[in-house]
Image (cartoon, rainbow, N blue to C red; front, side, top):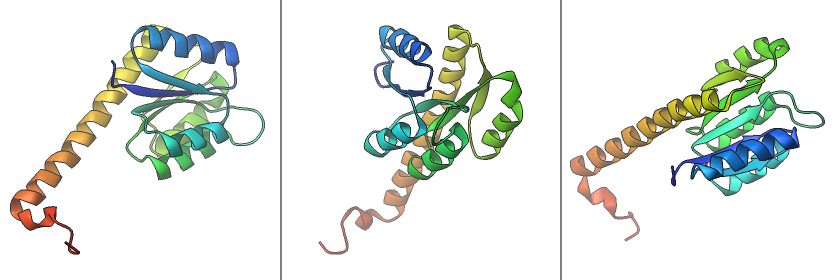
Length: 150
């Protein structure tokens, strides 16, 4: 799991720290932030394979707004939404915006891991398809390796 980069976004600090620490013990490259705004800043600086995003966060940007921005910055990152029972309709909105899936709180750590691995596989498959397409393009036109200015 050394190359699996995951970002946890949740305003519940105890939950956030517990999940980040448990993921780090399993050798994930895990980071945590407490707001949508912080998530956007970090996503602009670092790439993540999977982002665990709480939908309901007090204050500024909620999870759905953060999801919209994250999709613009890192469209291939897989986002798993966290929600309470009352926000299932919001989760469905998130799925329509491209979230990988959602989990209802309280979550079981093993269930989160299982969902994260499925999201990581999807991200890895997208990455592989992009690499293969670029290789095929270079095979068809090897001169594309060089910039037109060279």
